[in-house]
Amino acid sequence: MTTATETIPSTPVSRRPAGTFLRLLKFTAARLFSLFVTVVIGVFLTILIANMGGYVDTIRRAEIREGIMVRVNSTNILDNLSAEDRLKRIEDMARLEEKRLGLDQPFMVRTVKYMSNALTLNLGRAQKMSSDSGSRTVRLIILERLAPTLILFGASNILLFAGSILIALNLSRNYGSFLDRVIVGLAPTSSAPGWFYGLFLIVLFAGVLRLLPFGGMVDAPPPPNRFDYFLSLLKHLVLPTVAIALSTLFLSTYNWRTFFLIFSSEDYVEMAKAKGLTSRDIERRYILRPTLPTIITNFALILIFLWTGAPILETVFNWPGLGRALFQAVGLFDIPVIVGSTVIFAYMLAITVFILDFVFALVDPRVKVGSGENRQ
Image (cartoon, rainbow, N blue to C red):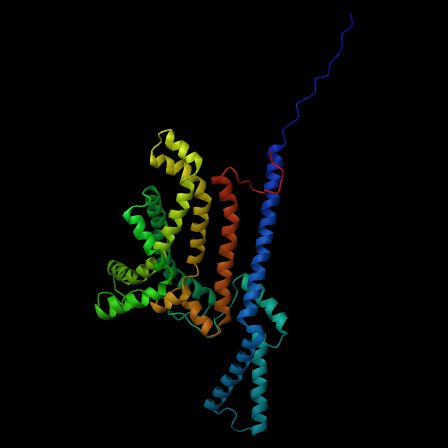
């Protein structure tokens, strides 16, 4: 009797985890590289625009010569020289100062070097603007102004974002109610910016009624103890917060309400209603969950813009934040502060976009990281 020997093929080891890791690694590297290139291009264009193609450098050269002339005339250190020698000495001093500041190099060379320093926030000292605490280092100016901006816009915008979503859910649940009609009617009033409402609020509550301060962050001089300081801060927060609310709340609520109404009319929502699910369960499972990527994106963009503040609104309320610092820097052609604020915003935007790719994959199973790869 002949026996046949059969070879049983070995089961191949699954390589799916390794393939997934490599795909994730390739996607991460490519995404980081593309975002870094975008940041570099954005910062480079900001430097070109802020310097007005070299015009600001011309202004700086003129200011250097003017400052030297003022110093020479006030100290009389060159009175013993002839007029020709005196002008030559002033010109030599100006050239030395230009060399110290790098103004003797070609424009594009200066721009590239300045861009490399800007990407590391090594911007040195502000040219013309100083912060309220006296610091002139760009990095310290940004850090000093960051806390007031986050206090004002962080508290108000995050609360308004959460409030507008909750109110919009209630309106989509009670479509056509009196409150729904009121919100829809008031939505066009949010088309005006916050500083526009701020002017009227200051005139009414500070100028006429004298109930609230005209502006600032706390009373002058600041209260000595923390509790009084906190009460003074809350008092100064009222008018700018109300101004932000009037310019945001109604229109944001109307937009989210329309968004939720569109999703609440889907067939799977009607099926859930037919199964007898409560309105809370329907909102949580079939309305909020599909819209979660959009909600997260909007919330992330709000967090980014918190770092920049609102230049005109902070100026109207004399709020010592990043927006007011940027507004002053633009008026004074203070390039280091302008570029520093832009670099912070660019980095925050790039980091947020990078993180959102992974967050979407976590909250929505339809989204895959590295969508260009074949998936089964």
